[in-house]
Amino acid sequence: MFIVVEGPEGAGKTTLVRWLAARLLAEGRPVVTVREPGGTPVAEAARKIALKSQHDLSPAVELFLILAARADLVARVIRPALAGGQLVLADRFELSTLCYQVAGRGLPADAVDAALQLATGGLVPDLTLVLDVPVDVGRERLRRARKEPDRLERLDDAFHRRVLEAYRRAAGAGVVHIDATGSKTAVQDAAWRTIGAAALQLRVGGES
Ligand code: Z5A
Image (cartoon, rainbow, N blue to C red; front, side, top):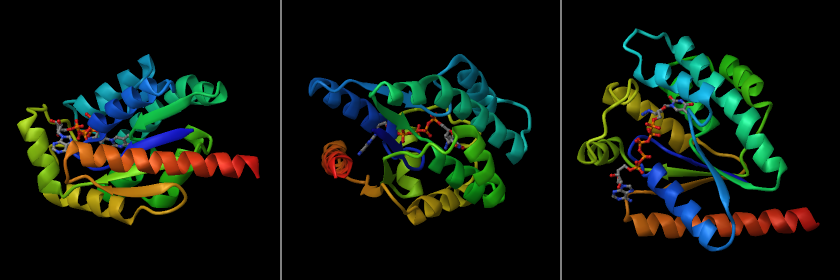
């Protein structure tokens, strides 16, 4: 099973991914956890440029750095883990690119779709949990956590509203929206219930 946690900045993705990994491990179901962009030496190098470069990067350069990272992560970590029967839990994946680089940056959706296909070979998550928080709530959480803002986090509220609206429009097989304005426990409970239901559906689907 391939599970992705998505959402705008400060939504609580990393907090949830860590909790889910610990809970799954406690239940005897170890997981491979990845965060995007990153997770291999090549992907971490691309991440550093994409998120920290002091140079002006065009939206296309940003896209190709992120997709270079994803192509390496998918080939070296995610596909081998799934092929070995392991559960993979990712902090961001393809939906981030559609929300940040297409809705946020304004790159054309059809060209990005084609590039995504090339980067991932068409790998699609079984379940995508989209954590929803308003822009100001997410920003306030990061401010309180004293996180050093990256190139994208420094962009204005209008950019982040476009990203959030794109997340809110996300739909399709395996996409589940979770209100992430509540307590960490409330978000964890909702995510756990959703994963349980999705796992059951996959099992039933696999047997029929
Ligand atoms: N990016 C892209 O543009 N295109 C792509 O395709 C991909 C990525 C894959 C990655 O940044 C950047 O890459 C990202 C988009 C871009 N930049 N932006 N924006 P990152 O890896 O450094 O971080 P992030 O993914 O953006 O995560 P984040 O915004 O730093 O936060 P988060 O993971 O969603 O939240 P958190 O770290 O779990 O929690 C933040 C704080 O809130 C922390 O103090 C928690 O204790 C607290 N928290 C968490 N949950 C709650 C609840 N429920 N209540 C109260 N407080 C909470």
